[in-house]
Image (cartoon, rainbow, N blue to C red; front, side, top):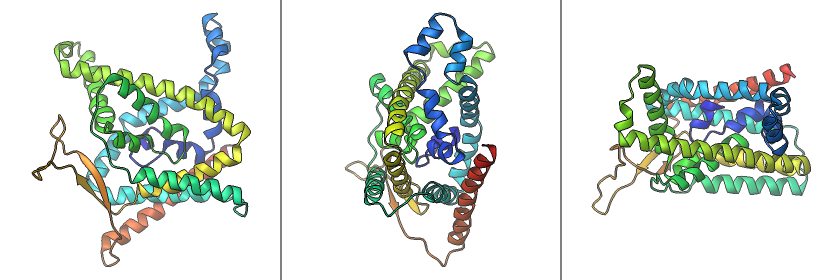
Length: 317
């Protein structure tokens, strides 16, 4: 989930959904309520950990943090050098997710089709929006934190892609994370020189605000989703299928980046000197190219990965 959440267009919630622990994940998060606070305030730690399903959450969050600083580094490398094949694999994973979630659905009901169509329209609409410019105001960053966890709680809605649309993907998931990594590495060496580095301090403040927003979003969204899963489970799953289908527009493998330019036609860069993404130019692949057929193989690989996850999830139940 940690690796998936970092990749634009891929939803960590899809991993939870297909692996069979999505509902337990939402159920555990919504246990952070007044009752859990009372247990904690009264130092009833054993009851608190049992009430919030701490064993499950600790294992899950630990895996996400580990993957974020390890597997996601590998993903960054692969996207930089084998972008077509990475997107093709994710495209296949989403197709596999759609098949797995939808295989037991009864599509003859008009109500189901309408909600799925709604989810598809919303998902596609999001995928074709243009990114905004970077904004490091702490309140806006807090809002970005709330939005970013949507990929964990709403399968098919990529939190990292929404951060791109908000203009803060590089700031929050690259610069701020790297600043934390560098700071921890220096602290281990007993080097505290970062305290006199205003850029580093600002990035750590940004990361703190982003983390606070993410935690707030996780808890509030989980309460909302727990309610709708209890009372409107079929509608919720229909919209999720639509979201996931609509997200295919984001991870379409054959696309080129379009970068922002000024009035003179010169490329606009951010504070790090990197080009600022404006949009994607999607195109149909040529069947005469070997790369196209290799990409098709990676799509099949992606489908098999998700179905393997699903089978493993069933075997563990």
